[in-house]
Image 1 (cartoon, helix red, strand yellow):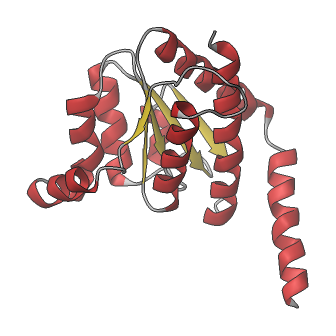
Image 2: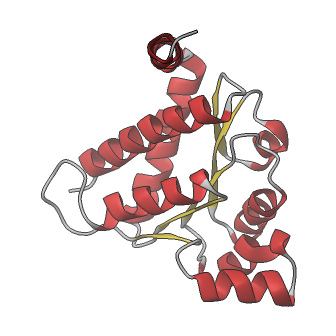
Length: 190
């Protein structure tokens, strides 16, 4: 297959995933946006966390909330738990890598916040621990994952599952979903 054919095939698959996004998952996106908007309206924040590409997507979405997405509006409270490398590495060293998000949520999370865990497989141990901690502290737990949701599905108030097990395609869809979430929350905030 030529490079051009590979490019076209990859773009077609991403377009297919987005165009055929299941109605049940669309309803979950709306519910997640509602939980995030409620957190912000209540003076709470949206907290994002994940590994690798999912970590950078969480950082990107937190920046869209604090900066702006489409509208000129007040800054919306949002953080990514991967931005403070001193905390990530200290917790990983002193406790365990599986605790890097749970420990930060223990210190930074408040009841009423919305916690968003991203894991393309739905089985990342540190993301799962973070979601467990979020629920224990009274935060809304939102998951972004792929495939069947993995173990993450059972830990979330709402879990958005991209119907693919190809990491790159799941992450491409997560970016689109993240932008949709930002827009919906922005529209809901006065």
